[in-house]
Length: 68
Image (cartoon, rainbow, N blue to C red):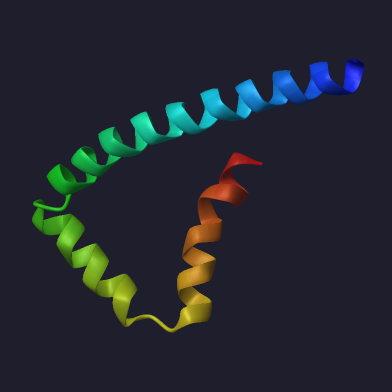
């Protein structure tokens, strides 16, 4: 009985999370398309694409470290 209740609750919880994520994903897609038109963002993207993989990974870790 309790196992079925937990299964029901978590199923709905995951459903809500996935629907929310899909909604937010479409908004962020439009925002990134808008931001990609700026020259500074294009230059930054070109700079990052020329970096070796280890340095690219470290760039993505910087916000994580700053939030700690």
